[in-house]
Image (tube, rainbow, N blue to C red; front, side, top):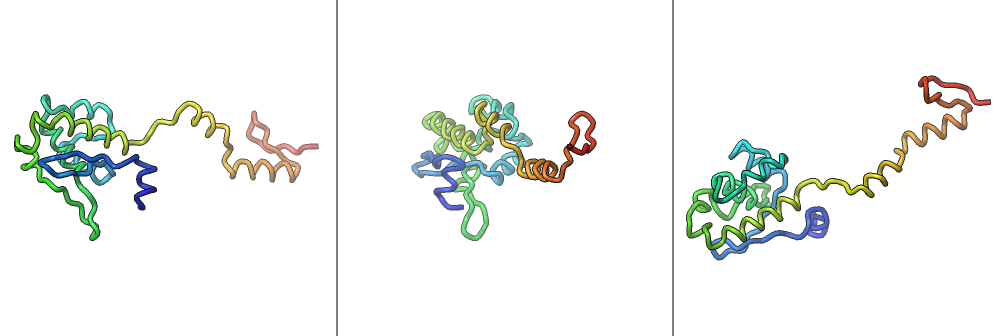
Length: 158
């Protein structure tokens, strides 16, 4: 996927400084599955986000960061610039940067999660009739038959 298409779909890349390194944090499906494998929690369930609290559950929080740091390499593998063990060290993630890292993680998570349609988008898509139904109705009208909406049976038009 090109950078322009990716940015349009997921928003601008979210970066964060960790141990003097600028790192991209993102949550494509691979990273979400890494998090689930590590913790048993699903990032697709909003209640799981409540567990991502540095003070309350540092293991889940760190696992989320670790998963979000994974980047796909040219050879198809996925790597993170830090291991879980490194991220657990206070000189890497601690009170000095936990808030900025936390904010970056949540910006990245919201960028990658499916968006709920706005009311106007939902109304617009409800007004659009699928092409198959439209073509079927036009064909039925041209041939002189139409479906009786109440019974589901075909009637001849006169």
